[in-house]
Amino acid sequence: MSRHLFAPHSTIGYTFVPETKVRVPHESGGYLVRVNRSGFRCDREIDAPAAPGVQRIMLFGDSFTAGDGVSNAKRYGDQLETAIENIEVLNFGISGSGTDQQYLAWREYAEPLDAQLTVIAVLVENIRRVASRYRVWVDVDGAEHIYAKPYFDFAADGSLELKGVPVPPEPMNTQSLGDDEAEFIDRGGRFEPLRKLVRATGLKKVAQRISRYQPVPEYGDTDNPAWKLMSAILSQWVKTVKTPVLLVPLPTYHFVEALSDPLPYQSRYAELAASIGCHYHDPLADLVAYPKDERRAFRFETDIHLTPTGHAAVARSLAPAIKKILGDGSTS
Image (cartoon, rainbow, N blue to C red; front, side):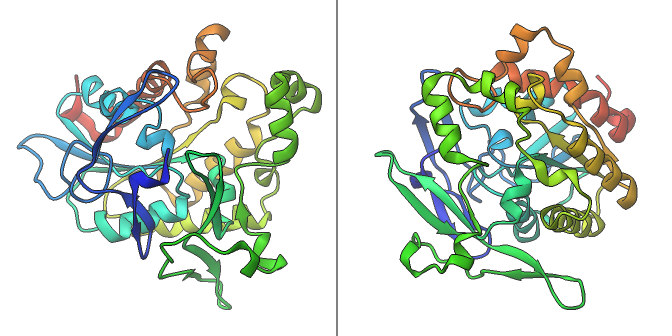
């Protein structure tokens, strides 16, 4: 999604431009983005009270939750409102953000709100984003720009310390970054030059199968620094929230289409949820149960984001877990 749709935020890094209503060009033919007064892609205002008898869910995530590629109503968060009676979903998803920034969005905007459930949807590749200090954005002309982001690090006493704030609104001068800082630039994945070559030559799936590609190796070791940071952020977030919390690891297509082994990330998030005592739902088993051709239709032809069909499948997986947590007030 284009950077011009976002407004700088000194703590989070950015939000959507408040009260935006724009059609975004896309391979699907385009999709409508509507943003509320607070700068989130949500048809509801976060400061408006819920209707009597309606239970409120606060939903956090990145572009897979904010809904890059689809109009607001087609997202899994919005589809949950159809699948479950008497609920409303406040979507706090921010495209391109890390779980650290989503936690900061909760602290800045959502902490005082009245709700019955908080859903933290962690796209599994976000483990790289929480370990980064800078993020690459590509403009409409294909030029790369590097923006700083807020980040957490461990203080001497083991507590989390927020750094990089206030976040500068302008792109960084990469020449001013030393080699040590350049290591903290998130460019969107491992082996990026090879990935670009494979995409260009049309051999992506073949290369992944041959190499047994693991897009998120950080989950393979409980002592991995990125996992330690991710788990600490989630632990602090969950322990601070007043509502029940549902932790949901969202798989990338590598796992939905059985190109990569999901066990490492599944083990880490299941262990974490058990240790901090929050609710947990892994949608992967439901998603891989669909036939191969249907699973491929969960993402666009070139854009890796969820199609309306993919969002519907995620909503169908989540709905029973959410009904169980909310109880009789949400039965349909």
